[in-house]
Picture (cartoon, rainbow over the protein chains, first blue to last red):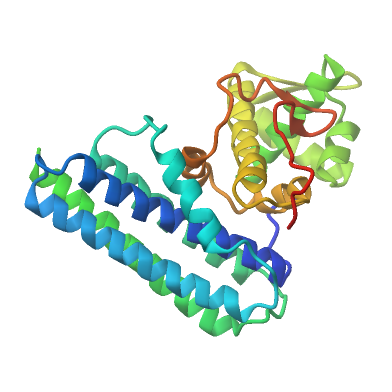
Length: 160
Length: 143
């Protein structure tokens, strides 16, 4: 009865990895924007956290891009996605508070990788990239997102 | 989006299209599952007070069922629009249907921060064409 669909092809896997790249870019762009906008008022500890979060997201993106490069599929180049993220950041007013926003980012990324790992786990397809390597990369990124959730939660608790 | 939410969305859309209760057959067709599978899930939704099933008449969603169905439909709309506007995917409907079980509501909310969705969403979703009536698909869109 379940409508859950396992990842069924290299194309679909590449698409999901591409979505992961966009999520990382959102984290990176928003963290950079927070630093830029709140420049004068930013607590040094929060600033350091945001800069670290942006660096970590850039690293995750690079790892996902390496995986996509191993799959024999066409994807939209990251250079085309980046300006879209930056352009539309300005219009967003849904999330209040720098740390809360980063908490949402980290939790969302964790949930995404967790669901992706589960979907890959239920798939019987032989991908164009080594399955063990693929899962190892995604699991490592997921753990870093979990650590990010912990870090930002601690920062928020310190400030209440 | 979990299986229950996919069913709620399907029932909601069938009800919208038929302007009345949704038949089990129409729900099964929409989800490409067997009528027996649809019946089983409808029973579970009834047990959670999300739907009411009257034999020979069809399925009606409760207020809570409608609320959850509309949230699920919004998530689906975000996925479709994201595929068109950001990734320029030509077969955005086929891919959205493949992705909806993997893309969680919270993930969709983040993707929503970089797309331009109408405030009346999901009322602008057309159940017959399975797409937002305001979604502009570029002629040159290429996957």
